[in-house]
Image (cartoon, rainbow, N blue to C red; front, side, top):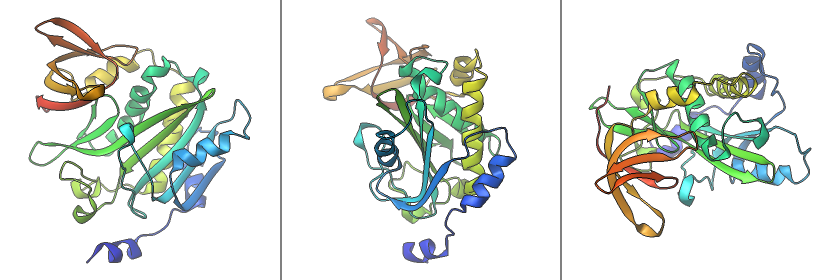
Length: 269
């Protein structure tokens, strides 16, 4: 079966089912726009913000993105019906953390939602959802992209739910389905929205402790690619409330606020 055959067999998102799943929760975010295809859910939300109330929460999801992207402008593959492409615009004042730590907080929320279905999900600093494969390799199953737009944080959540091996962009990616994890997309969208709203309404003062416990970056030797293609290696010893990664190096401790982490050695449990 080819990619076109796989796409044809996939069902589109059912807006009524998303609302039905949300009705089982305490979420008040019920005004959701659902599209079959968009260029980018984040771009669409940003366009909507131009005429939105300053305190509005906007939610957009789609079956397919044709110009989806992740951090550092990397392409994010979003084949029809094969994953979660969800964007939420939330006033930055609503978050119980520094703006710079929003990607980490949202990553923890997404990880906790997936942890209800699998204990193999980990967090890679700063914004990746990783899955421990059968051969104990870490493979990317999702990611978080946060863009600041005026008073809002526009949060993009991408999760590979049903991609087949031929649809994966690289050998370092995977999907929930390939790991034997089956989640209906509508239920996962509702779960993500409810969990995010709950942590805003009822902040967990221990969220950073929970993030550290779920991290596959901490307590590892890592190589970090910095802006301007500089690199630095060290032992990832901590993540701060600012969202910065602390590296122990022969020259002392260094706080990394932006970079691309390559795992050199880690202990997967």
